[in-house]
Length: 99
Image (cartoon, rainbow, N blue to C red; front, side):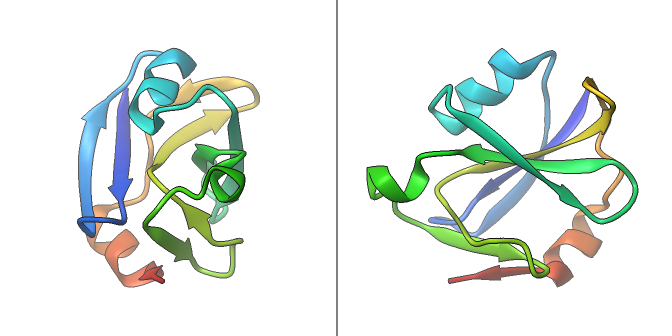
């Protein structure tokens, strides 16, 4: 399914394909996943729950969500089921701030 990978160290945003939460954990680099809703269309930003405890470098913030340290992945969700992310890359670029 369509997901968006955010790498704050390189300030890159790219579309990637994921099949499940294991793929998301692999992209983030840790299996302690947390997520926050991004907008009202069902998209969620997944990130390492312990990112600040680990001292992970590279930080970013989307809209007014809490800042995230390290890699993030946006995926759509319907309940507990993953689905394609709906947010467009241009829209996301306008809503993300690198810290």
